[in-house]
Figure 1 (cartoon, rainbow, N blue to C red):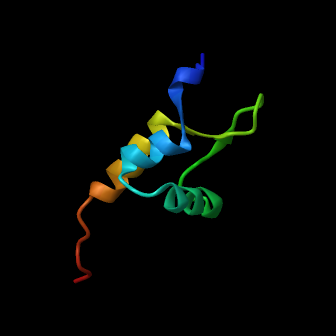
Figure 2 (figure 1 turned 30 degrees about the vertical axis):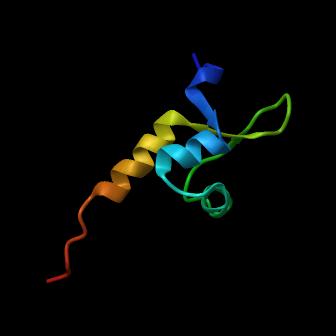
Length: 66
């Protein structure tokens, strides 16, 4: 079962990722990070699990093509 505590608002999500809120909004608009809307007030919400997945992708080393 999903809980509202599984989600964070834009400011907290940006802080977790270490980027500005505008950067996070752009990433969400482009589909780089999944975004949800709170049905009660329309605020952007980000799942903590999605933020963790995104960070794990960023942390992977890039190997040069050989």
